Image (cartoon, helix red, strand yellow):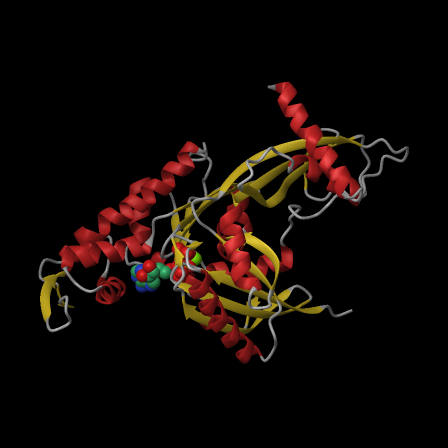
Length: 411
Ligand SMILES: Nc1ncnc2c1ncn2[C@@H]1O[C@H](COP(=O)(O)OP(=O)(O)OP(=O)(O)O)[C@@H](O)[C@H]1O
Ligand SMILES: [Mg+2]
């Protein structure tokens, strides 16, 4: 039987809001609508102005609706910002029924135990992703349902974020009469769009360097191990150019994209560019080398901060597949070569994978990585953050209390 449904991804970024509508037939994603509008209400990945964010979202959604000729009533929406935290946690349950066959309820039970960690009142769970299940000591199981065993364990990746940041984003989307199918961590979404399964298996770090944030994620053994968002990206480069060359911000943005590079030594001394002066009443000539000298240290800082996070988390030597970069700033000339030289690892730009159809020539740009990833997440994501164990809520609460108690007893 042909299974067909609409999936919508909404990427509320710092510089643009992008809405992608896809028709999914038997798991194959065909993009049928796309809308984009400049983002006006976010800073460093989080909503700071609800009214303006709603306007930007409305415009992007309407554009996508018109193109696809559908009504959007349900979206997978991305979230980022430095309030995001992630940890790995494991849990175990016993299988006590006589037949010892593991059921879906057992999986929910063990995931509920794994996601039960004490959280401060201003922090909420966003994702609870099973990395692997272990049945009676046998590791590396992705779906234990139907197997026989007495002990079911899970290693899970938990992602948390600020209640206020989540709430503000939800409010913006819901005030337009659109329901949220799920909130998805942007680094996770981007990774689904641009990483190959071989890279994820071997060990790789993905950097989505956007306008306001750089999203970091580390994959190993096919699964996510680490995710973090740092509040520094392309807009900081533009600001530096504005100050360094004394030029308006729109002009700084333009020359960054047209002439910017982060390889100072690759620029000839004779290369000159025309730049508008502040006030807009004239232009001046500056050397392209000067521009590169402004950009290079900022790119170095962004990449170093990201790699420091990877190092601090203990994954620096566990990424043989190297680094993949995506997001708008990955288009900066020389950034791949720069990172390769600096860290001595393989580096490539992310590419939209095969299996995505429709508007491919447009969505090929790295600024759509998160949007495409949201569509993929909508089709194949595994998440237990909102799945209640079959016993219902009170059972959930008991497990939570029990989990807390166990931690308390263990000190
Ligand atoms: N050719 C280019 N060279 C350098 N930078 C570029 C280029 N094209 C786009 N950018 C930069 O990419 C950034 C926008 O990227 P992107 O669309 O991925 O960000 P976003 O999703 O809106 O923001 P974020 O993910 O940080 O919230 C801007 O800072 C822009 O200047
Ligand atoms: Mg982005």
